Amino acid sequence: MTEILPESTRRFTRASIAEPDDVLREMEERGEEFPTVGREVGQFLRLLARMVDARRVFEFGSGFGYSAYWFAGALPEDGQVVLTEHDPDELDEAREYLDRGGFADRAAFEEGDALDTVQGYDGPFDVVLIDHQKRRYPEALAEVREKVAPGGVVVADNAMVSGAQDFDGILDALEGGAPDLDEESRGIAEYLTTVRDDPEFETSVVPLGEGIAVSYRR
Ligand SMILES: C[S@@+](CC[C@H](N)C(=O)[O-])C[C@H]1O[C@@H](n2cnc3c(N)ncnc32)[C@H](O)[C@@H]1O
Image (cartoon, rainbow, N blue to C red; front, side, top):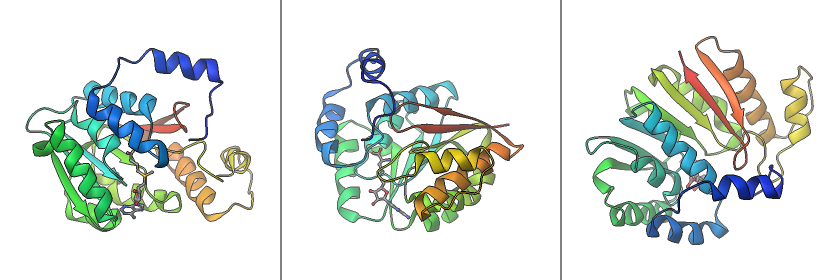
């Protein structure tokens, strides 16, 4: 994970979080070779879900279920988190982890392209997490926009950094420039400017993990 906070600040945010359960800790070990949202963002997502009394959560890109596990812990017994993943092995692992946490009955495991899967769901969703291909973030927002409940939130991970993402170029685009961006960075820049300028949403970027854009649906 590319860190955006100074080390002491990152340690501070980490040390302020209660120790997660055994399954999450095991998932974090597994996540050392896989791009999960990380503990600070995971806790923030759970908190967000609690704050909006979330019953239904939709994820674009679930991997082996780390972020979904954080969400599941905030849902009522009849709540649901929809996991989407095009890698069946990742999804099998997610099923196993959520089952071990006692959350399997609060999860729907959808194999395939998340952009197709979302079309099969009516919403409303109280929380949406966008964490799949960066170049397709704008497409995901367009697909899910009308399915976000008023008072619900959309969170986009990697709003600030991710691998080779062009931080300065994205910043330039946000400040009104017209930089020549690679496909992934263009996806993030377009997502951030679109949601920022959408009168239906209010957005802040929170510099936890690799940066999350949190957008409240009016
Ligand atoms: C960054 S990881 C997700 C991590 C997860 N949200 C977490 O924090 O545990 C992105 C995942 O999205 C999957 N993915 C990418 N594009 C997808 C798509 N269009 N539909 C479904 N899954 C996709 C990848 O296979 C990968 O496992």
